[in-house]
Length: 232
Image (tube, rainbow, N blue to C red; front, side, top):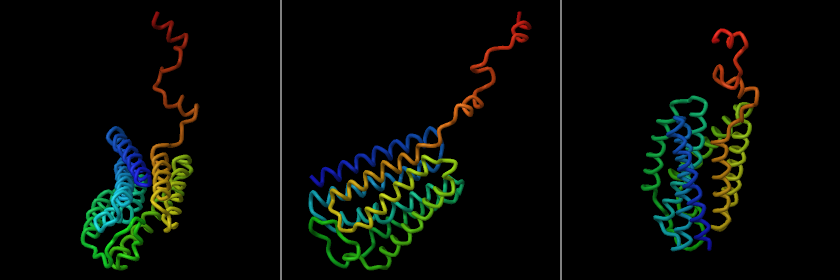
């Protein structure tokens, strides 16, 4: 049952990541591409949870889980937020960090073999340097960037930023409750993914007055009597 719940969270996150990627192609908003990668990392982390729950945890499953959930999700979320406020250097930095994170996850020494059914605790299997230090620094900076941008632009995007802040909060609570089982962790992942997706796509709706102003000249208006007379 736990494996099914984790797999469901993976499918949900993957579906939301695909929606953001589609929106990136049609709107040409670069931040949507980075945010899609963040939700894809959520999907991979959830798939690793399903792997560990179904077949028992192993070193490869733990490496995948740590890469996606511990090294990629929060930093990509923060870098996408920086792109939202026109920090163009965030895009190449995101590519650089993904490459570095993959290298860390592949090369990091596992000091105690991973086994069992419970979600492995990083401190039981990894030295602090380099893997845990990289995760702490990247997650702290990524969360700080996401929260800082959301607060700075909340008047312009009240609904979207409120949902992003809620998603970051849910993810933080799920991370803080280190003793959670796979089912509870999957629920937190799914809830955070939905809230973040909503924050990425829901902007302030235009007011009726703004909508009228945005209409092209002549749309929705009746020609004046003088103009009608001139045409006659």
